[in-house]
Length: 196
Image 1: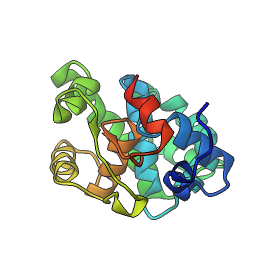
Image 2: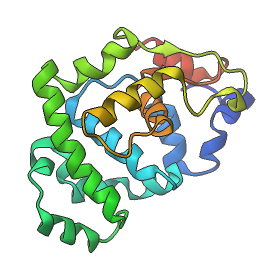
Image 3: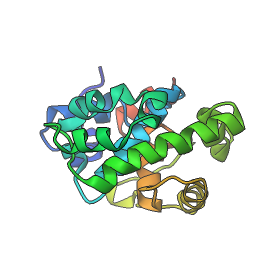
């Protein structure tokens, strides 16, 4: 385990003293994801974050995953209006009708992408040539909220019927699934993730 350094603390600044956020920074953030179910899960969780803090999502993550059948794409795609009403009353999740509807809509769009490309993984990772783009921020303030690539991907996702996929959400998603590595250059976890 890397030693606690001031750079690591700066890279984790958004995590503050929250154990879930620290664990997310250390073990999940900017780590490449290729599992279909997890690619879908993170897309939905990032969309749910819109207008909220990531800490809120992490605190509710397990309840959200349970409520949405573990983000099983096939199951979520078959959700009905009755399921939407049930979800609006389910404790521990985000009770925003548009965001709940978006998860169901995105599951159906996700399936179409899988049918066209063979997998969502193939579709999404082609945008970076199947590799992690490693950025070199010196300070967390150097990390942008969007990029030309996140704008381009956002437009294509919207064209394919996805919702809650604006450029900022997509940029955050790209970090979440390791398409971007935005750990500060001297953060010890950057080196760990680069070796995977």
